[in-house]
Image (cartoon, rainbow over all chains, first blue to last red; front, side, top):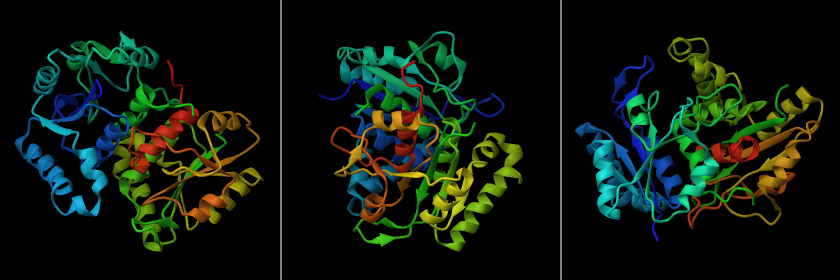
Length: 188
Length: 188
């Protein structure tokens, strides 16, 4: 059975350093690191969200290289993780695709490094994921994070990862930690 | 008080895809992602281990750019995380530096994606870390992982992160997950 959790990596709308709404460029390392995490933890899919056609083409070329091209022979484990990757032009487009696949609207959960008034914790979200009838779409922002509007219009906002007075993890590290908190077999 | 945990990212000796012992190239993303994790979880230091002088120079240039150069103005959070980064020519050299700093030999813990006969689990290591008198040096291999000799000569080998039939995480993701399992405030 495929997992009821989908991940979206948002390149627009996100903030830049000055809190202006921008479109960030797709980072090659994000595609590989996050798809490997998605595959490790058995996610249903990983949506790379960008409105820029040039970036859509770039992602499709990278996936093709590792899935059918020379890369598929050099490193077949990438082919396996990249089979989870899809590209969408917007959060809504990805949301609609998940809705079509499951015949129901996914529950949208936003993430971020700063606290939000209605945050839910990891234990609670882990418990929610046990309801296999509900489909979840977990969003991560690139750049300086998801906009306030994306957070406010989500069903939940997940609590930030609390560091020792420093919370500037890369989005790749945040995804790894959060998926492990939600789905990992942690205390072996 | 500085943490009693140090991290080493090993570029030699590690295996390549054919299980031959090689020296891998330093990856820029490793430096940033792992130093941010080290800073987030309050580590004592992060050693980049490479015997190649050209790579030592490269790492020092990257650190200098973000600590004193233009990068320090553009993104000061990098300066903060990179202050934890040191470069060593070998595992032994890093080990000796930690020994000098703490006036005692660190307990060396190796990591890897495949099981080892004498693995210790996360709960046990978390408990060991509570003994503030002991200093730990946690090693991660790049490429296809730490050699058998490095594992066998370590005091402990940490259990692999178990995925759903797939264990090919990037070293960046593995570091993030393992540090969170050992030091994170996970179930909030």
